[in-house]
Image (cartoon, rainbow, N blue to C red; front, side):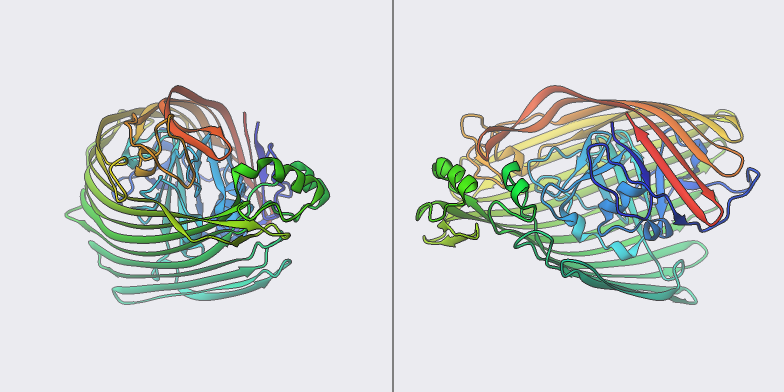
Length: 593
């Protein structure tokens, strides 16, 4: 039963996810009467097009702008979302805030392979879920450059693959909307130091925005330093009818997340680690060109083309499973010198390239707001894994004693083509009905570079519908509800580790390539939201999501296991949210059962 009162103070991370001290400087003072003169407008598709007043959206979309994110604090974007959005909580299994699992309504966006992924994440309309496992690397998202974000709940088909429990849509800053500059330098415990700088401006039809952020820390645990480097730029040309924007982003990060330790070690010394290193080096480049053009007062064309490259290298020092009995003695009594082959260094190198395009036509005519769109995404993931025997040291590191051996080499290609349509129909001034359809076709081709055991060619097709309503009972009270369906196709990493007779270890010692079903999620949601006199906003809702052929990693002992489909898994709950202003402060709270 997670519940939270969110604020600028750092919350304690517990199973109940409590964060108290809701004292945030408010951007506006509370009014004593309800102001109905302005409405919050939200986008309902990944591309610019249909924008609806929030009261007309048939779900509980939550949003934050750059001022909200700044006041919420937190080191990573995942931490900010936990503090600012009810039903969101974060687990730092790796012990690094940039490698957190973000959970929303029982669905997860995680950088860790093997975690069931169920949330899609977009940056300026470009999907940033990696092709190899649908993972999300939070450290590659430019924190300083985020202008606003929206968390879209449910299995909304308009956001494409992997939108099982929701979609997180991030928009970056522009010079015409965020002029001026700022600089920040900070320091803290455990060697943490960093800073950020940003500058935006415009001249006539042109605008520019540049940002850079860096962070170094030693970490509060042994052998746990990390460094983060992010660069971002956006250049735009805008007229009365046309907008053209070029987005450039780069990140080069070195993260240490030494993971969990046995309870006995934790009781003796919290800073302890079990083995090291557990290192992840992430590097990414993103280039995206987006455009929109008003054909007339009612018709708008928009599109995006992008190229994204990421390289991930991991180095994990682990114990040799054949020495399990000795590890127990080593753990309890601190004895060293277990054996010359007591440890192993596991290395992986993953190079991914994604490119694609999306086009959309939006039209407002009479009581209808239509949008028709198409998209195509092409990804290539090259995965290499090697092992090197070694010896556990007295500091719990691994000293290499053998030659490095290639264990796996896999090339995975994924191509996804989609068509979608949506219509919001105003039946009356107070009642809106929204229907959507999206067809996804995904082809996954695996090529084994060390044999033919992993070779495979799989095609997945799905037509996903959604239907919902929003009924404004009063000017400040809206009832909403709806049904939605989304799907997720297995990725190359999952298809390469799906044989129960040949289990593998993660990141993966792959051994076979059998067929896996795609995951299909159907969500029902109903709720009511409103605003009280004085500006207090509230919402109460219930949801139920059923995964069919859920795709999970099943352990077979130690670090070994395989991916397989489960018949059905269910997520359901009740949400309550409150937010408001009190003099110069604002506050927010939430409870999820």
